[in-house]
Image 1 (tube, rainbow, N blue to C red):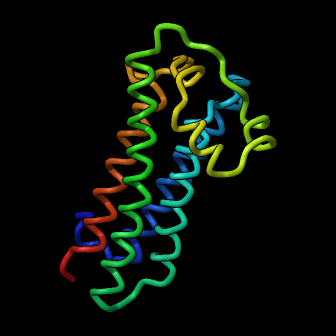
Image 2: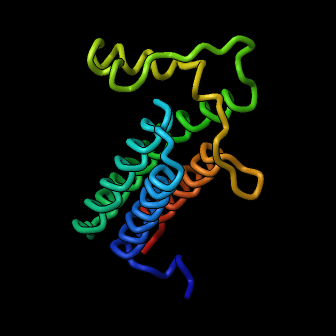
Length: 165
């Protein structure tokens, strides 16, 4: 079956199913390894969730008009693009760890003592525990896999949203 011949609804619901599988696997790894995710991992999960919500809403709405499909395609692409940026930052920290990493505050402490803008600034400026590699598969770390998944989801969103029907 050619994925290009699928309806917009099916393509977007498949995108949602893919995001659910990705998030499910991330939670499975977290609970099996009993490892607390770093702040960048949490933001990647939020970006996956946002992408999944757009895929779900777009799939359920399934607009007949070209403009509606394009809007959902662009929204899903933007959510995935944000995930690409966060995962890219995480991959960079893992490939080029800081010379003197110091453990930053935990997620709970950040939320209790900062505004959301302060939390965002602290997390995206992370230089400590986000550089630790505690999981890999086929030579790629979890953020590398996340980056790859975000790129595929972004391409899928554009394909589904802008394909001629």
